[in-house]
Image 1: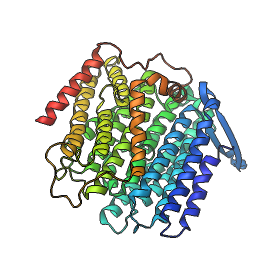
Image 2: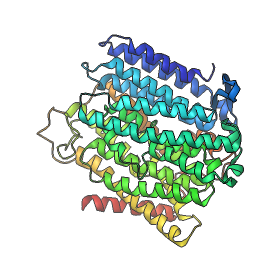
Image 3: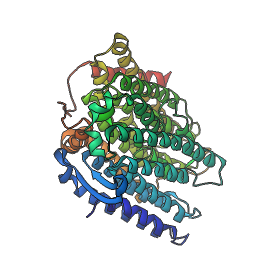
Image 4: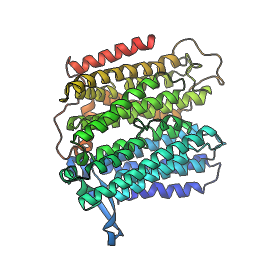
Length: 522
């Protein structure tokens, strides 16, 4: 099957969904789920073709006189993102079938959702820089429509406008950056650009390209100082939040940083700008998350912090740090999507997301509570869960970095402080909501949701457990395939063992867990 089918099918489905009856909630979700599942299975079947550094590329004539063709290109890194976009997208569709009210105009919801899925797939499969910038702006447009879906609410309209203004402006900067980059290389073909790293870094216009591309990436991934738009986007329906802020929209920025890592990284400018933005975002997001009283607000700021962690790893100019960044992209998508959906279930069944009003829900929602506790533990970096493994790799990279004394001392301290904060806000999400006396002043009496509404959360939490216990067997081959194109074709030595001995990164994890617990209790 042609690769372009993975992009076209969601757009075709979007058009069909828009014309279905307003009360056809089951038909709408079945259509969207079937398209997502079909595309996810087709993408999965491509894995043998992209393993070991191989690339699939298909071209369609677009503007031959300008040397521009539509190029659909899949390597291991694009394959990984396709699996996140299409796989988690399918699970979110199933969840949305039960979350969305019968009074909601579901044709509009699923039409926008499928169009966004197609645009995001277009970003990761683009083999042409101009084409990538086009799909990039489409993701901003469709996310605007999804965030503002409940347009009768003032906060939804405001959040949608803010997201479009920030990410759309960043997209224009990205377009200018890729035009300059194409001018330096002499081609907009991604394969040609990725092979021209030395020429780009030595060019007088390198700083111009770097700043413009980073403005696009940092605004999209809500990195400091552009992080303010993401919490306002929480006015969207929870299925939108679970999708856009775990596997797609905000991951587009770190996707771009990783995609162009072989071209733009390796310089002091890259280190200070990307690494500086990452460490500031890591700390600011984690600190702010501790004080949120809205469940989705807490998850929004924790998302900002984890994106900062990924950005910092990509800014360290280390191939091993880049591998850790790819690994954390995978892990974060699974536990954060499950946490957003768990928060939506709590809101759906109790009538509120206010942490101050919620208490003792584990007795009323034991299965949902157990799932949320496991996902929160993965977010906090508890051993035997997937978040622990990539957090350990992150701690190791901050410890063993060779740089100025300020960086060598400051980076591990900043990483440990962020780890303490992450444990504290994860404990708020679990202990304040699921333990303690049973809440009595809730709008509804909480109970377990319909079984199929909970299935997506169960599958994602299962992935957190399997990867945490047996990382090499479960994701080893997939991580190798995904990281290989990012680091330029030669993987550094690393191991996915659960236990690496009693070393400094493990001590940092222990300090983070103990310190976070004390901070929460205090």
